[in-house]
Amino acid sequence: MMIFVPHHSIIFFLLLLLFCASTTFESIISTEIDHQPNKPNEELKLVFLFHRHGERTPYQLYPNDPFKDNITNTVGIGQLINKGKRRLYHLGQYLSKRYYNQNDGGNHFPIEKKSPRNVYVRSSGSERCLQSVTLLLAGMFPPENQWKWMNDSLGSLWQPIAIQTVPFDYDSLLNPDYKCPFAEHILNNEIYQSKEAKNITKKYRNLFEKLSNWTGYRLNEMNLVNAACIYDILLSEHNFDLPSPEWLNDNIWNELKIINDYVFQFNSTSRKIQRFRCGAIFGEIFHRLNTHFGNDSQSSSSANDRRHQIYIYSTHDEWLAQFLASMKVYNGIPPSFGSTIMLEVYQNSQINEPYFKGFYLNSTETESVYPLQFPDCLQPCTLTKFRESIKDLIVENPKQLVEQECFVEIKKYL
Ligand SMILES: *[C@@H]1O[C@H](CO)[C@@H](O)[C@H](O)[C@H]1NC(C)=O
Ligand SMILES: *[C@@H]1O[C@H](CO)[C@@H](O)[C@H](O)[C@H]1NC(C)=O
Ligand SMILES: *[C@@H]1O[C@H](CO)[C@@H](O)[C@H](O)[C@H]1NC(C)=O
Ligand SMILES: *[C@@H]1O[C@H](CO)[C@@H](O)[C@H](O)[C@H]1NC(C)=O
Ligand SMILES: *[C@@H]1O[C@H](CO)[C@@H](O)[C@H](O)[C@H]1NC(C)=O
Ligand SMILES: *[C@@H]1O[C@H](CO)[C@@H](O)[C@H](O)[C@H]1NC(C)=O
Ligand SMILES: *[C@@H]1O[C@H](CO)[C@@H](O)[C@H](O)[C@H]1NC(C)=O
Image (cartoon, rainbow, N blue to C red; front, side, top):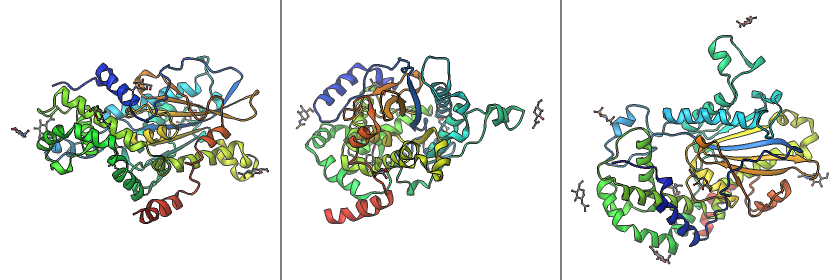
């Protein structure tokens, strides 16, 4: 049978619309693509990019998975595949055009600033994120002029760029599953116990019985989260050119897809969890802004940090969904491979403070970005206004957050 291409499915959109209308999840991304060149009197100062890795093999298999050996004996579990490598390389080429090409009427960095020294890169410690951002950088920063380090092919096509990371299990910045018992507690005892979640679970009980039989999961293991995992496994195997299991048909596929959408929405809806998952990045963003524009902007100790113009963060779909939700612009659609959130900082002579513009590239091949209209930070979204809009989320000290709230608070709570 043929899986796909479900994002063009009208039924799916109707269901999504119904769902959005009937819940409190917010969906405030403009549906207009941004074609407008920026105003000429405005200067691009900084860019923060957050992107998902490329296509991968499944990060887990279901018990009866017939393709276990085909995956473990080839590229392995949860690993970037060639399709994903190409996607991230092309994404890098697009970003190079977006931020440095001087000939399209848009607003760019001066070409002489295009240097590996002016980019700061941090990746989730998972191999697929590290590899993905390596490819993105290869597409975005091929060496030019003094940066060519050898005359033959490699030295004039590719240059090394530093990528910062920490081991995955210790990464409270970019690992969306970073161990946080209190977050799990909220999900298991509040979100997935809500009337809405129970109702949806009930609706799919028959499907869960069948899935249990087909996949080998015990019936009591079947729930929305696990069904969403099955969807992810099937999608990843499809991307890896493995055939679909014979029990999969279009109906089952569409139901699994809808469940997966719900799980992304449920997982990202709690403000408390948004703070656990994205608070540290907001703290980091404002720390960096302070280096460039704030009290630290004159200090010589931060001069070395002020060379950075583009900050790139390589991460996961769940993380991007949480991040969008925390700014109240999640559209309820799981971020596809290579999806990129752009927070661009501008200055102009009329406004006495720098301001943000947000964009979302959720389908890398289109190279068309959607403007993000932050409901709590209307244009011009100055740094002060933006900070105000997310001030309940900002975490200055992630270590303390994790130790004191993720672990300790749960004891108070139980
Ligand atoms: C991208 O986002 C827009 C705006 O929310 C949405 O209409 C579109 O379906 C999304 N596309 C994908 C592939 O997620
Ligand atoms: C999976 O692996 C088996 C054993 O190596 C092989 O016979 C089979 O053709 C493979 N299937 C696919 C779809 O690659
Ligand atoms: C590269 O080519 C230039 C010009 O032909 C030459 O001057 C230079 O020595 C070469 N560099 C290396 C490392 O081979
Ligand atoms: C439960 O779901 C059904 C459709 O499956 C819907 O008609 C009903 O309004 C929902 N009830 C609640 C409490 O969400
Ligand atoms: C379970 O799956 C087998 C095939 O794998 C099928 O023959 C059987 O009818 C299924 N049972 C149920 C209850 O779906
Ligand atoms: C920045 O400096 C101003 C005045 O010098 C001071 O009032 C303010 O508290 C400082 N802000 C930070 C974050 O240090
Ligand atoms: C949702 O949250 C559960 C519980 O933390 C997690 O196991 C699951 O992987 C998450 N799924 C998605 C799609 O975010």
